[in-house]
Image (cartoon, rainbow, N blue to C red; front, side, top):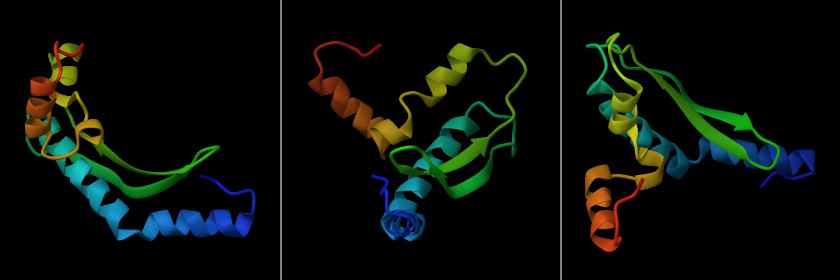
Length: 111
């Protein structure tokens, strides 16, 4: 949570920015999303534009990374969603095993 005290608020931001655990989680999800995107993307077009950027929101700081890829012109929105969802930030890693466990526990399919 953000603090009204500017010194504490900045301390919290710096902690998030430099925390090895948060950075490791971010890299794990970036790698997963790069892999998911590479199944659709044009060869060698998946790129990480930003890594470990801290954005300031009203109530929290958030660590983000930005990934982009060039897709074939005829790629449908459905294909994109099918390749990316559920997102790794929801499932964690390993994504496929997590989805198998969820499927075995839930009575009906999601979505």
